[in-house]
Length: 144
Length: 116
Image (cartoon, rainbow over all chains, first blue to last red; front, side, top):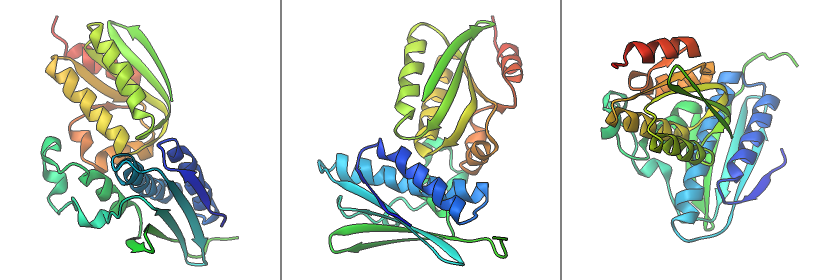
């Protein structure tokens, strides 16, 4: 799949969303799975743009790419904002949903939705770049 | 995002169209806060035209809910897209923000609970 490189501003969210919707369609994901993936990518992209760049006083790009195989769709977000591992902060515990809204850790909801929305999520920092990796299993036996 | 507000039965009915995410939610918040300044306290958010909400959108819905409660008012969401409703449930927001299937039900809910 063709990759997309966008200036890291909140305006990029719309284009990233469209890219994911298209990728999910190509991968035959059902509508619910597609929403989960779009939400997961959107949450991380929002973090990259606001925390990785804007609040850090940095300017740069966010790139989205996709790899489709027979069994999975992998989406990768890459950026050169400050190194940030989403899994290292505010990871919601088992009691997350039982906490009153005002007592929940800030930022916890985003990563909660990421982990709920995709089959696998990984983060790595390689050559000065953040790489957030989202994997969706494709439906088995989908007719062509 | 398109935001259209009208008044009915002394309630503010806000119809939304588009994505409610980190880039568009501030528009809704600004619009809503402007409406609060005018003295309005009871709101229906018709989300029929919203097929996508992220945590940035949820955050603003929560801010709005807290604000109307502080003013002894009310906010009800109506006509939610099934996936958006799933998201509210998954995030536990359905316990805090009332959601109904139609504007009519929202009007009933708000006028019933309203003491005049």
